[in-house]
Length: 122
Image (cartoon, rainbow, N blue to C red; front, side, top):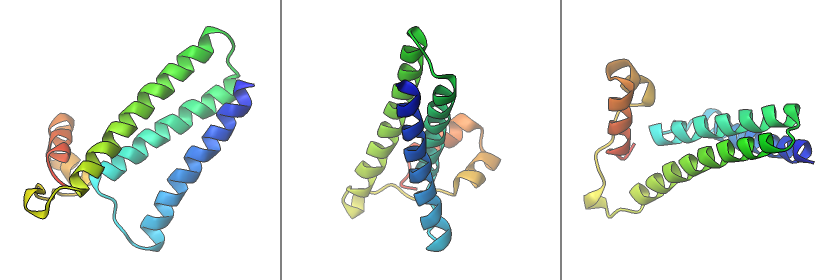
């Protein structure tokens, strides 16, 4: 039962990721660092679902997969909430934009780059 549900959820996650990449490469819209972090979270969720589908968990393993997926989903929701909040700020309150994620990770340590991402508009 869980194997089928996990496999369908894997396809849904890959579909969402595919849609994001389609928009990026076909319409040439570069994603902001928050978008990239959300894609990373979706990728992790997809991998968890795929491993769960292949593993076909029983008993407590089902709860472990579910908890891990739930934690990653909450993380993605918080990232999305931050992005929506930034997009709905009045123009005079929007924080300044930052460099792309690759550039931030080249220049700053990971934690400092994350701090900059969350304190800017993208």
